[in-house]
Image (cartoon, rainbow, N blue to C red):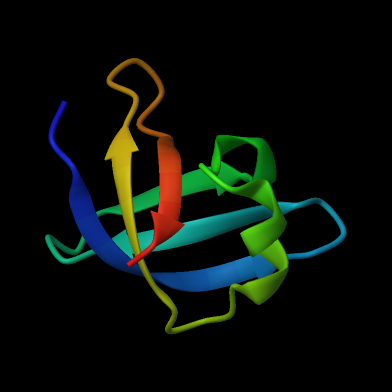
Length: 67
């Protein structure tokens, strides 16, 4: 799988989910459990740069980590 880059555009702390807009302008949802280091979820805010992979069947991001 290819590692992509993008930026956080939305974080929902209560639901522990977020949305990434990739450098290719596509958006991908992710959950805290999809992060490499899930404790970093609390460090995320709109504009934070991340690296991630995309699950082909769901289009969701996984292996999300700070860039």
